[in-house]
Amino acid sequence: MFGEKALRSRFALGLIIGGTIAFGLGAFTAKAYFGRKQSPIPRPNTRPFLTEGFDFNVLRTSENDWRGPDIGEKIDLTRLKSKDGKTLASMVGKRPVVPVSVNPECAMCSIASDEMVHLHKKLSSMDINYYLVFFAAQTPRSDFFRYSDSLNVEGPSFLWNAEAGPPPESVFTMTTPSHLLLNSDGTVIRVWPGSYQDKPVRQRMARQIVADILVATDTLNALLPRTNANH
Image (cartoon, rainbow, N blue to C red; front, side, top):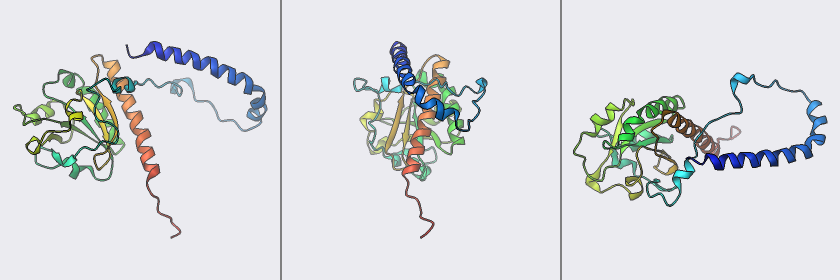
């Protein structure tokens, strides 16, 4: 359903190619390997070789109108306001932020609240803020903030200020829930659309989101200008 057949085919091909390369290099590397100091291999219960993730690229293909914004697109964070009137822009600081787009009329958002609670706790430990947001095209008749409280995700939530105009089409048509990784100026870095009915799949999706964020933030940190201590 999520490309498992294709994944198995690629895995099998990898074994064939990897085995051929390993056979060709074996004689060359054996002497060097056994001639240097070796580190102990982790015990099996640490599971160093297995990470079950989720391929969000399948959901981000161009034929899916609900895939969310393009990488590099900007979202005006001053238009997202909390219950007490603070803007998301004022809360972000200089760190990337992860908003999750929800909708009071979305049944899947309620089902996926456990995924949101988990991600909030995990990302908070990584010093990354995680917020519920609603990209409303007009002022909703329901009380969004009461609804967001019911999802049990700590921290403020943010509602799009529709009085100054509707949100960008790409975020308005995006499926809910969807997760975004935004730079402090609102630039879209990554998008993870959707969730799933079955909890094991939601858990895999959450693990993938965390893994992708680690890679993205490490890359961003590496690109930051460093102060030369000699000057």
